[in-house]
Length: 187
Image (cartoon, rainbow, N blue to C red; front, side):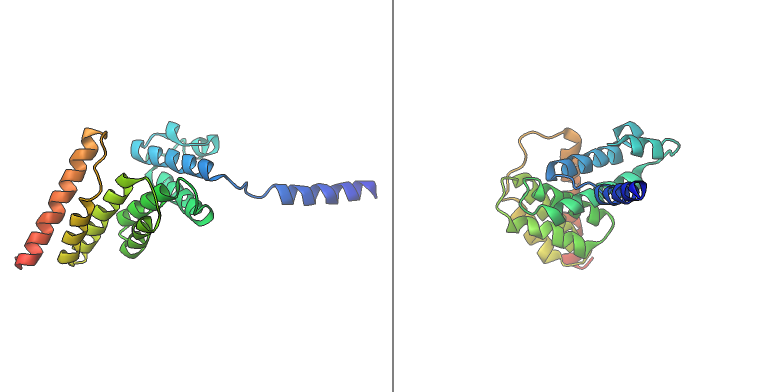
């Protein structure tokens, strides 16, 4: 009888406490950022957990795995911590990832939410407007794209960022302008 009660208690405890741990907003953010780093580097050593590293040890390309897990963690942060200091970053990163998947409607929703929140993150507001311009241009709404680009100018550029990121941003702006000019001229 004691053994049976102990076993039942143990199983109930195991099931109750063995559920997925609830991560804090900071832990979700750090985990998502670690997966993003691994996504960009394609290095197993950049994955956040030993379990991830073991799972991926014989895989040459970890980008899909890192992408899915980064996106999942950003989405968890958005769903569970709308007052978090990381909320705007998670919205931006989700919007950028949705853009990469060509899920334009979801990307527009994520990026547009950034402007509903009082935030110190001018950088993400500027980049969100540029990505919204890109989506509008892809959807052949050239006037809206140009309006978004104009709006992006009211947000200051980051004072310190890497040369590669600056070049990428300038190329994206140039490409959006060219697409809009071509579309509006009918060529």
